[in-house]
Amino acid sequence: MSIRQLSETVINQIAAGEVIERPASAAKELVENALDAGATRIEIATAGGGKALLRVTDNGSGMTPDDLSLAVRRHCTSKISADLTDIRTLGFRGEALPSIGSVAKLAVSSRTKGAGEGYRIELHGGRLTEPQPAPVNPGTIVEVRDLFFATPARLKFLKSERAESGAITEVVKRMALAFPAVRFVLSGSDRSTLELPATGDDRLARIAQVLGKDFRPNAIEIDALREDIGLTGYVGVPTFNRGNSGHLYAFVNGRPVQDKLLMGAIRAAYAETVPKGRYPMAVLWFSLDPALVDVNVHPAKADVRFRDPGLVRGLIVGAIREALIKSGDRASSTGADAMLRAFRPGTAPQDGGASPGRFGGGFGNRDVRRSNVDWSAERSPFRPQGFGETPAPGFSADATVAERAGQGGDVFAGFEAPSARSETFEPRTDDAASGHPLGAARAQVHENYIVAQSQTGLVIVDQHAAHERLVYEALRKALAERRLPSQVLLIPEIVDMPEEDCDRLMPFSEEMNRLGLVYERFGPGAIAVRETPAMLGEVDAPALIRQLADEAGEWETADGLRSKLESVAATMACHGSVRSGRRLRVEEMNALLRQMEETPGSGQCNHGRPTYIELKLSDIERLFGR
Image (tube, rainbow, N blue to C red; front, top):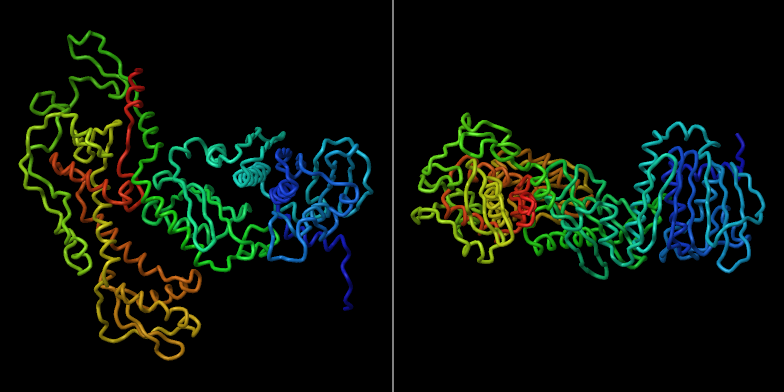
């Protein structure tokens, strides 16, 4: 079989298979071109999920007739020279328009600012027409019709119109977050109009447009710098999370990316604070020298490669964790909103209170005569439960808690009940106004929830979840402060592995030794495990070693063992914390509140659920129509 050169049309169609995967890919390329042209207003119109019609209109710099003829040819661009290490624009390959034109009906109309008239050029399935005069405002209009009509096989793999339309919406949202100073309008016969006015330098306002107004009160600002790599943006409090990773956004030098390294680092920063199966919300911008990042990894330009991935990962994890600690423990505002929606106003008794009536709304219209509430003065439902009862274990942790954790002893022995006698509860305002964010305990309801009065409103605390977090943080502190106890294997476990895996694992031997895992090289292709962490009990040493080697190769770290140990600590904390249904004294409840205020991350339990909900006084007054 003889070798022959492919035609220009076939070459463009092959390139289109890499660049233009679906209508959203075409929308991304066209919007990027508009932004590179300096547009401040971009309008996108679609029909049939972008398959029938995709039109992008901008007010950018426009093109001359000669530029139009070159723009639809492969590898023609005005954005870069020969230096691929200094890319400062979104597009640079010169493949978007010719790729689209090879598989669709493409028309480009453009006019430069100050020119008397505009011009239009068409490219249908690879067939090009000459530029013709056309009425058009300054800027460019790119119209794509019948996408993939020239490659029917690709058309069959597209999803439903609704799914394709949603993908285009996501592209526009990402571009809008990257460029808050640009106005975006997305409309069409197959969708409702999405309009995102320009917000200038106010990034948080643009984020609120895209992610919803609830993001602003739950946002924490990020501003960090490490070795000339800048990181700015906003992340949500841990209790403000979602069911998928669609609310994680990252931008590298203004370019929207969906890089696994960045997404993984964001999730790692929220480890043990977000429930399993839930994802944090974050919008982050990275600024660095273009020479330190490779954006030429894939034609779609969604992936990037950093020269020092470990540095970037460390920057993300460190900056987010530091910001979470500095912001203190904040309850998500959505928790209070949900609580307000759960309340319903009651109705007054019909008999004027002379006879037992019915409570409406929040009491579910239960007949008082059938209620199990004890209305006596001694057991009033408004009297705090547990006062004067047998005390439960208290919450004043002494300095030996971390010590016991590190020595493998009873980590809960340090939590002793206070010796102060229980006193008659007298509501006061001075203790609530003493400056404590979580206020002073007023009652315990259903033997599980502590009701506290703060200076600004009301706080409801889940006692089990809160204490669980406090115990867990004490255990984590023990993990960080000393070498963990280990158990010596009677016969060393020999783990056969490829030589390169052994090479990756050996630099972390000292760090692993501190965590209780002792191993050494046993020939060129094997590792000898001599000690394993006591906290893990009986452990599959070969599986653990192989997993650590895989992680060391992917992330250049070996955090897997520490994660396992912290998981064990979380389980121990859950079983050792004060249980639901245990009555507490006022001193114990206040001690718990004070320790929560002093402990980082106490706003959520080890499973990521909130430990308390705050209700502002203004919200309470609104319930009563004041």
